[in-house]
Image 1: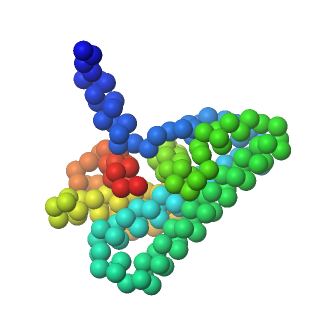
Image 2: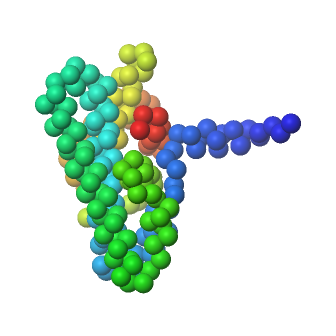
Image 3: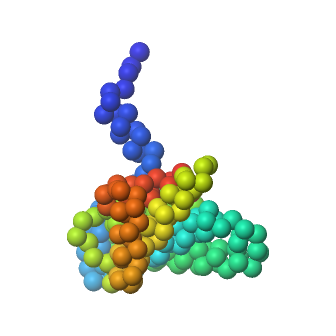
Length: 141
Length: 61
């Protein structure tokens, strides 16, 4: 019988509370090594952070005041904002990927993420938290 | 979920909103003060509160 060490248990517990990092932020940043790709990368991070903010707001409002979600118009307005930001993030991922193809760069990272909306949403949240955890990083311009 | 747990999660999610805004240089001074007040109220370090926000989202996403 194999018993997990205390360190293994701690690592597993931590992993269950974090978004899975499929493509490390710094790996992707290092591939964006010219002005155009750097700008596209920063735009993508900007939209990942916008998406994270909208997801936090959505969940907070649903928990804080569930009755407001009984009102269809209110719920729709909040959902529309989140949906629009999610779509914009997906577009930015695809624009970056297509531009990398045009420049002859590897886009294996794009295949790792997946193509459906929940996969891209999780990627946005994972990227955001990696970015947020980096010390001494200012905001995305 | 207990009401205390719900209140704690609401605060963590509000912190998540605000730190995402801060990282985009869009948080106002009042919002930055609000973040710090939430962190102090929950008695967590910055690293700890970020991990807790991520944990709340991971469980619910």
